[in-house]
Length: 99
Image: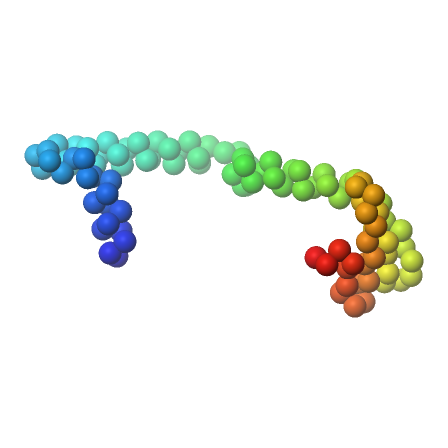
């Protein structure tokens, strides 16, 4: 609660020298501006915010540059576009990439 009060006081710091009615009007304007910002955020057509959607799209495309070769039932070799090759053993939950 104390952090909220400090945050609020820092927002109205410039307005504290004004009469109380002017302070209230200033707070009202700030709240209205915040509501307008929130309304624009709510107009997204995606499930995630646009910045996260872009990151997700890049990460979805990344595995497409890899090729997979099966060595046995649970062991695979993964060749990446950067010419690195990794061994993945699903039965031991092991990957040579150390990820």
